[in-house]
Amino acid sequence: MYRKFRNLKSYISYKSYSSIRMRKKIVVLTGAGVSAESGIATFRASDGLWEGHRVEEVASPEGWKADPEKVLQFYNERRKGLLNAEPNEAHKILAQLEQNFDVTIITQNVDDLHERAGSTHVLHLHGELMKAQSSKDESHVVTMKDWELKMGEKCPKGHQMRPYIVWFGEAVPMMEQAVMEAMGADIFIVVGTSLLVYPAAGLVDYAPRQAPKYIIDPKSPSVSSLPNLHFIEEVATKGMKQLEAILMRDYTH
Image 1 (spheres, one colour):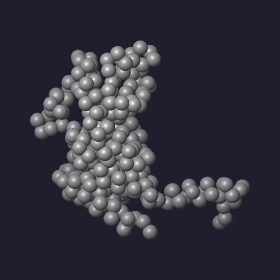
Image 2 (tube, one colour):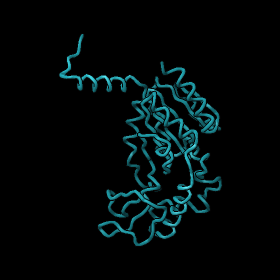
Image 3 (cartoon, one colour):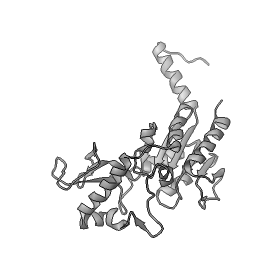
Image 4 (cartoon, rainbow, N blue to C red):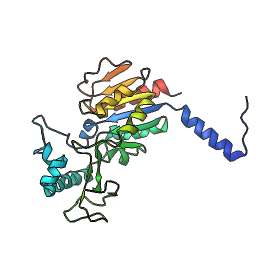
């Protein structure tokens, strides 16, 4: 059956859309391990401290209310460190996959290394370090030009600006969209996360049963009951090199 087109432009648009739809959809869940090789410290040490602070002090609404200046300084230091970091090979490979696949990255990380590597569709579940938001008007979000956010910097409505970070006890606004992305995956990849932090860890359960699921981590998480599961027990850079070869061999022509 032939499809009729009004003009050449309509035909080209249709062909472009068709070629995109024919590509496999890859959904990638990334965690701290994917940025660790860029020098970004993982979330918490084994003693439960984050860069020497109790998490409740610097990553909760209660901590912000008790000492906003300490919280601002904490994230200023994280931001300063991020500006000196560079995307590693794992970030770059994920970006390069867009040449052959429809790729969505769902990250628990607040750094911008995926974007700087070239990934164009990134969902940040836990916020973004290089952005700030009003402490009262959640719709007011700005991209920061530098590393420092100070007391006295206010939104147009007169409220103090705070880090654009989803703290413990706060809702995860991007979660519903992330679930929808996971449900549409042809291939689901997990890189550098122990799958212990919820609700993000539950996203792999939303991937279609028939979709192959690849988990890259030096210590395989306890999710062996999932169907079509494949483990690559490596750090992110080495694991992504191995997985890239598998994907190019098995899913491109």
